[in-house]
Structures are given as C-alpha cells and as structure tokens.
Amino acid sequence: MTTVRITLMVLLAMATAPVSATDWPDSILVILDGQPEQHLLGVHTARQQKVSVVVMDVAPIGLLEENLGRGLYPDTDRAGRQAERRIGRLTEAKKQQAINSAIARSTAAAFGVRRFPAIIINRRFVFEGLYDLRDAVRRWRNQHRSKP
View 1 (tube, helix red, strand yellow):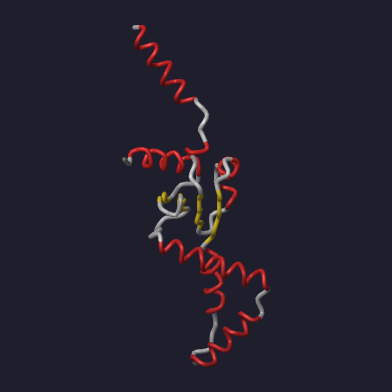
View 2 (spheres, rainbow, N blue to C red; view 1 turned 90 degrees about the vertical axis):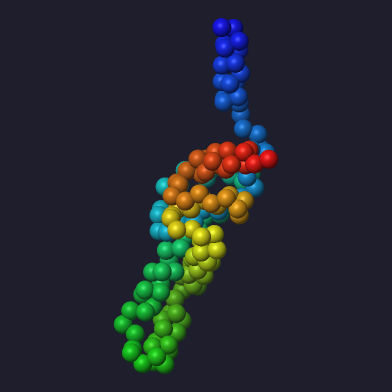
C-alpha cells in the first residue's frame, strides 16, 4: 500500500513538474489555409519558451490567382498583358502577401501537407489538423522520447 502511494506521488510530481526548455522544440511552423490566426492556441506559450514560431497562410495566393484569371481575353498574348497590368496595380503589401503565400504553398507541398492547419516542428515532424501548438508539442515529445 505504501509503495503504491509513493509511486502515485512520484507520478503526480512528474506530471505537474514544470517543463524544461529542452522539452521544447527550436522551431514551429504553422501553415494555415484561410483559418484565422486567432484560432491558434499556444503561440504565446511557445514564444515564452524561446521557440521560433512562424505562421504562414496558403489562401491569399489562391485568391489572387482566381481574381487575376477572371475575365481574361481568350487570346493568350492579350490575356498575359492583361494579367501583367492587373499585377502592376497591386499594392506592395498585396504583392508581398502573395509572395509569402506562394512560399507557404510551396512549403506545405514540400512537407506533403494535405490538411490545415498544419504544425511543423523542427522542420521534421508534421501534425495536421491541429489548432493547439501545445498539443503538437506534446505529441512531438512523445515521438521524440520514444526514439532511441
């Protein structure tokens, strides 16, 4: 009975012990597909642990492509010039948003992401469909610890 109580106390102490900095990854990349960034949980917590957290969104480039391609001339040369004019009218902020989104889409493809949001830890471990970075970090810890 005493052994069981001591074991339970040790397990409880381990479960409630503060997490050390080594239990946190170096980087977390979150890729969204139009989901509001405000729906993500644990970003502040991860940054408090000195984790580099980057959030990217693939949605803006798709919307831009859709808008640029709408109502183009059937003639390829004229359509190309028309699209170039439309791009030229974009603000610098919109152009930068499109570039960042294209990078996000390329990154998602490189990691084989099919479901968003996707949380990528240390550019190696991919967790799809999660909104909570803390949950992804817990899963990463479990995978990380199970490897010899």
